[in-house]
Length: 94
Image (cartoon, rainbow, N blue to C red; front, side, top):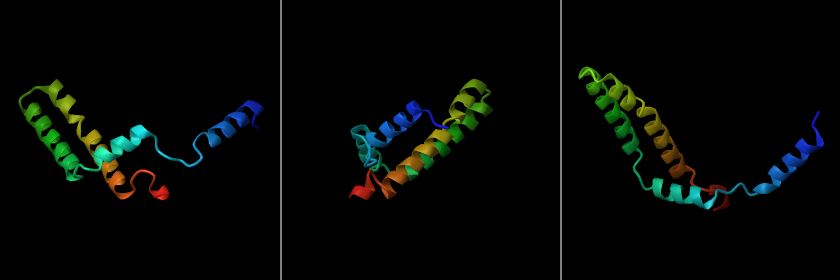
């Protein structure tokens, strides 16, 4: 059972951004990231894996672990980049 405060909070949230539009910061980021080629992020991920493997061979385990954590964020950024190119900011309103 919902309390009156919770119901009021939900109503305020529903009225906050009824058009579901992005803010100016997100639009600016999308404008610039859409210009980057998608394979840039794939190459960055593969390069960081190679650097991590090289550091591991050189027995620099801490550095290898640090650099070895970079591929996942690079691939996530690549996915975001691709979504921006395909869907774009506020595509429904265009």
